[in-house]
Length: 499
Image (cartoon, one colour):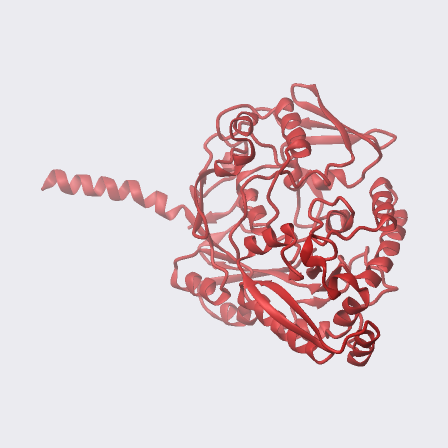
């Protein structure tokens, strides 16, 4: 009996620290493939923030700061970017993170057939090791946006050994150099990471294990937090903010994001693009005019979101003020529909299967019906929705973008003819020219002129119908400390503690 009691006590002492240091985080969606080269989901980026360090990171005030690269400099002509790398960094498989690994990762991002990073790195002519811990990017033309691209998935450095062994299946067992390493994944259920003992900044990592759980229903996600099954949730519904703030034991943080909410019209992506809405911009213009964006965002987001009609929010320095958010005009919308030869226009809209998006799209459905659109809603899991967009199996699709620190990241890859996530397959040589020129200039005033000119064309042709800009809202237990809200929506776990 004494031996058994001792064994039980030993087991309890062993189990308790692991349990107390586990952080359980509720996500709105399930991530897609866990390969930085291939993925595109917002929640995937949240997981990467714990698992895959980047060459540079973004601070809460949206400045580019060191991560795997400690310093960098541009050549005078803007066509070379040199970076010095952090010494002593290891990947989760124990191999060294060095210049050769950076070169291998960037080349993989540029050449892997399944890579979605190609357009983000399209300005790179070559990348080479200038020393054991120094890399040099040589560009085809000046590209001021490259540094910002390297602060996201394009700059997440992966183990060349694992990438070579797994190829396109890297996402089944990803190996990076972040504070937490991959343990397991069960689709639609959980992603489990554990603290990496050899992380370069390990003294600031206070959590032993992180479990991400996809829970699309905002009510269920909050209930799991309140019951103690979760420690933290992202994208708390705005309608629940007051209740959570008024309850003891919880905190709420929020910040206006740098992304947008939008509808993507299938312009030329396969057979399903062959429909009036995809072929005639007048119908898209009518659809946009039938929406009251301010009312929409007040009703659904309790005033925490703002209406928008561009890839940048109205308070952004990149917003074209000459094209303000359009007021709702049902009569003008009806006139455009009639001019296009229709009285009623049937259209299928696919939407993500979360209650907030569903509520918003039901209101849009009702608004546009008054103008002459008969919208049927097709609800689907978010990763599936993105896959359907990629394959062109949609007419109109609601898909939000989390935003990037450089304006190029909110527009180029969605709109240019060969953009990596141009699911509409919209292609306009004038828009391509403007956006490529904006990338090449280091003068903000010149870039602003290019984005303004592109916005004028896009507001006329409307391959993407922007709806507005929401806030990121997190809720978490009082026992969680050290979390810093950031406009990019990421959950950075370095420095976070759970008592």
